[in-house]
Length: 126
Image (tube, rainbow, N blue to C red; front, side):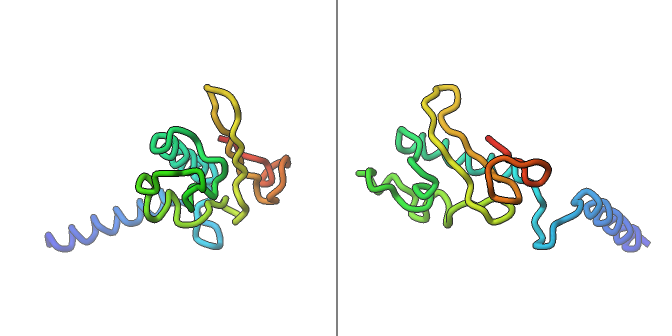
């Protein structure tokens, strides 16, 4: 009897978890481009903490920059193992800007991979 109640409770929990999980895209990824930008922005901030400045490009999160003199301070596997891309497989757009309030702009160019657009093609910035 207790086993049956336990199995029923587990089934209920799994059913609720499946509902909360929500739909996925064809490739199994949940379309949440803003979360991807937040993750990349966090690594950019960690890079700045480690090296005193933001990288010149996103490639410097994968491979140590040539200007870096202390290679010991760079993670062995980089900040990312490969160049981060958006949910559609396009490169993210990263620009350093000269503003203390916002030292960089990070853009997901939407489904079409081009600046501008509406709906799924709209740019998402961080």
